Length: 308
Image 1 (cartoon, rainbow, N blue to C red):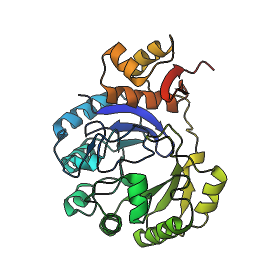
Image 2 (cartoon, rainbow, N blue to C red):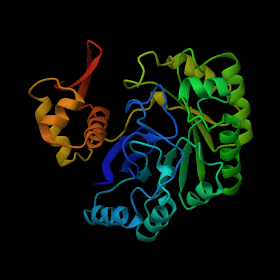
Image 3 (cartoon, one colour):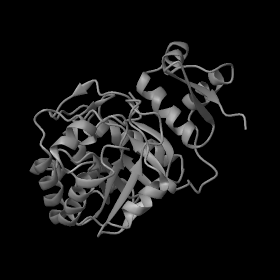
Image 4 (cartoon, helix red, strand yellow):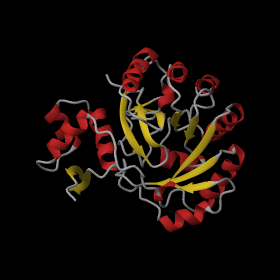
């Protein structure tokens, strides 16, 4: 099983080499806006899903190609801190390359000391916090029943005190859920407590797990950003500055299928005999770079080559 994907063009990180170290949709949350769909394995149990030796071998092989990337990033198709070997993987990466390591996490397990310790060697950690109320946490993130937002905020705050690297706190704004009133007031108080290096406001820009998860307007996001005490960026506006990107062999195979007719993810899986998680990752890369477009037909998502 390949754990590396990309490099992926990122609005925040430039050209990012992704690392996926948990099974597809294994997460502590089931967010209504998730571009990968609904969570199939909702859990807080950490396991050594993929060990450091496998990951480090793939990274060494990638480094031999001489391709340049701005970050090596833990993200992918689930919550990376659920892999109990993430600390060893990060330490191993730092020994073989100077490329900075980023971890994109939902932050829900940072109340555990072992999880906080495992991320201390990363250069950048990007936790998310979409609501600072239990009601909002349940509605937006559909959390594991053992998670409480107070404990999550305490965990991120404690990590901020212990961690010497950069923390960018991401808030995903969903129209009608966390973009007004009490929700924003509580978020601002939580941000003041956490003291991240910056806050990044995002919104729903790709097809979400639930159709009712809608984007917040650019104008409103800018108004909300101006109200935060910490430095706050609206990443919804960002464009990827690089014209060139790496397209994998799998990506090329997918494009060949899309050139014939619009197809669903399941069509591609059946046609090419690939794992669904790998197909989705490559579709995200192709969509980010403008190579494909997405059409909604009778409630189903179809992918097609963008011939413009």
